Image (cartoon, rainbow, N blue to C red; front, side, top):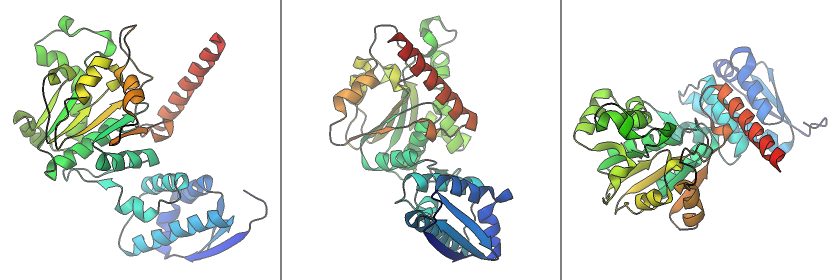
Length: 327
C-alpha cells in the first residue's frame, strides 16, 4: 500500500455488529486488509478506512452492506465473511449483499449450498443460463458437488423430470471384468462420489426412493449408448477419462428440455497410452458453439482442507520444473 494514503472514510456500526465483523483476534478484518490494500481502524463505534480512493470505496460498500444486513437480522460467520471478502476482492462488481442473498442454492431443504469462489459463482450462473456447461479443473474445486446441487434443485422445482449421473469406469487402471461381484457391485466404487454428493444434499430415504423409481439414475457412461435423454439434468463426471468416441456419444444423447454438465480434471487422465481424452478434444471442437460454456477452476477454488491448495501448487511447480528440464 502507498505510504501516502489519499482517502479516509468513516463508517458507524453498532457494537454487536463490530464484534461479529472483526472476529476473534480481529482475524476477519485482517483478512479483508490482506485482500484489499486498506487499513481499518476502530474508534469506539466508528470505523476509519484509509487507503487509495478506489480501495476505500470498495470496503466502504462492504461495510455498508454488512451494516444493513446485520440490521435485517442476518448473522454471518467468520468463514462466510472471509469467503465473501475473497470474492469481492477478485470481482469488485460483486457485493456482500449479492453473496448473502443471491449466490445460494437450497436444493432439497436439507443443506444450503453457496459459491465459495468467483469461479464457483460463474459456474452456477453458467449452469442456470446454458444447456451444456463444462467445468474443468483440479480436484476439490466443487465441480461435481455444485453440479449435483443444481441438478437436485432443478428436479425439486420440476424443471426436469429426472437426473442422470454418469461416469466412465476406467479409474485406477482396473477392468470391471476382473472385479468381484455382480455388475452393480463392480460399478458402484466408481460411482460412489456421485452417491456421496446426493446423500449430502438430500435425506437418505428420499434419495433411496428416487433411485428406486429411477427418477435419479447413477450409471456408467456406457449405459447411455443408444438413449436420448429429454427433460433431464445430466452430469458426466470424470470426463477426462472419456475417449473421443464416448464424449461424442454423450453429447449427442441430449434431448429436448435437458441440461448437461460435464466435469473433469485434465491433469488426472487415466486412459490407456495412445487414447485421446474426449474432454481435451471437446474443448477444442465445441468451445465456440453458442449455448455451450466452459468454466475453468484452479487451486484458488479448492474448498477442501487449506493444505490441499498448497499440495496442488507444489505438484504444479514440480511438473513445470520437470517439463523445463526435458527441454
